[in-house]
Length: 514
Image (cartoon, rainbow, N blue to C red; front, side, top):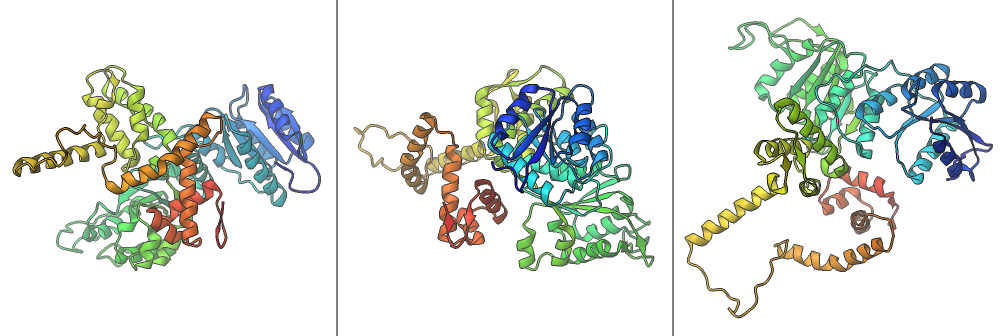
């Protein structure tokens, strides 16, 4: 790892009630310029910090007596510049948010690989040397108050939880981006619930669901007689959210005229009701969300750049469900439990074949589509175990409609003679009917077979990742590293391409290094 980033030895304190864990850390770092100290409880950790002044602390969340979060708070009181990485086998959104909110530098989910551990520790030790600065946050909330929990243990969701914890207690404007159905409002509510404004209102406005002619009145209110149907004064959402948080969902659907008025409130905190002359002042935190690409809308003149930069102070990118498939079983488990709690009846289980079907699906509607699919399956299943036939997916519905159209067309026209001689054997239909896809399937078959054989011989890699990385490298080489052109060739967004480049650690110069 070469964990030491400076001259001289650096000191790591490992806090875990399991002695084998400490032994494992010593083995990992025994060849590096690092000293490992051990503590087996929160109290011992505080004593060791006072005595030895470590550069970094790696601490388990669950310990007898004083747990990791309680110890973390006391560490922050001792030394706010001391970096702390939390470790746990029990990952929930609340745990990660609270750890980051209380000043943790990072969060590791057990079991983690040696490579992952070394990467995080190396970065933390460098930060500890360059500038020791960890933020001390306010005490944690006793429970999450937003309506639905955020489910997910994937690395993509861990990044979201960390960001929520880091920004929650500030007043910074937050922009949440991602496809429809990824849970943007849940993240907005999580930020609010863990903020210092959580005792004031949280007001949500879906900008796409309100007609443009009514949106201004909805946001800013109006005076009696301001227009024909204004029979009384109305308070707008900004006033309702005073001292609290206003969530502007689908802000990319807002007209330029309304964008201008939102910008004024962000700049000055002032506005007037429609038809009014009194200038009102509000203290409101703005959290905005969109499923659209605001950067492209700015280039097209459909979104104000000055508003974009006001909103994009902190950005949280929500991953699509297909980008975190490992979370699908956890989401399914949650939705099944919720259906049981809300509707009663027998406990419903899911067969392994049905689970495989759900995990393999592309989920264009993301978590919202998965939720509706599970609810439909529970309501229509003939037994207390969900089978693949109980799972109805959009792609299957589209295939059924195509079959019906094909059948109706064939009955409306005289049947054409079969060009295949009657004596020929039936040809098995390929899984993919389109001619171009059949060509690709034939070309990739030998490559795929070689990768599968390599895995059988014990090589540890993801076949999908190898193929995806090869496609990325090829596209970037074809475009001489131009990410916008490469994303268009691949049929993905530039944001998704950047994530993939970071994930596979692809280095871009004048050509792509492989």
